[in-house]
Length: 253
Image (cartoon, rainbow, N blue to C red; front, side, top):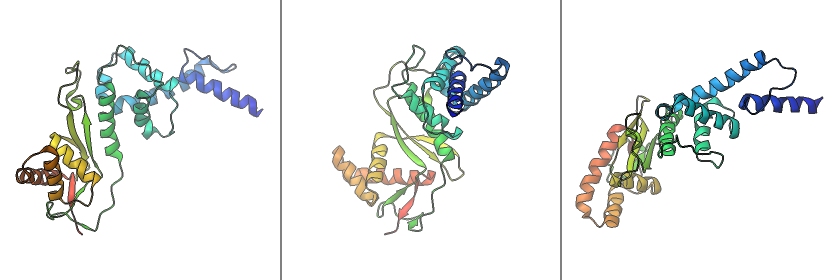
């Protein structure tokens, strides 16, 4: 009995994953199976479409549904939660399971990642308040504290500008640097930043005890620039990031 039940469950799951390739289990009316097929596909397709609206707009209906069916049929998700479907779909696009098609834009994976980041930040838990922080403190004399709800990202493609009406065929010479963050009103926003600001944020993350001044001096040495000039520009950048909530304040030593 247990073996029969397991076999029936396997046939049932295989059929609703890909009814074109797998027959429905014997003894189950197709009208009843259609309810499961439609609910299963519509729910998952809806989550993916809502999570990747720009990516969806770049595909025809046929190509899009073939892509979703490929995900449902061939990829084995690690999480059973609906909230994780977008993350699983992103992992699928970079997995060995995925088989590219002529309909895929060259920036597909980077665009999908950018869209997923917006969703991930919108549902990320609020960080615990840090008692050892001065929100109005001197960012140059103390270590700046980067918000855990601010992600410093770099892409080959201008993902924030891609749409159905703008689809570049090759990446620009200069990479795109973006901070995607959740502001104090829990709205997910993005801001384009310069390569120097991106490097500043990377150093801040790698050296959490370094002061703003020390971070700017390290970048100036790496770039071979005048330290005093870079300190002025760095201080302005840090203040701008604090104003947006990307930097929470200065750590109190």
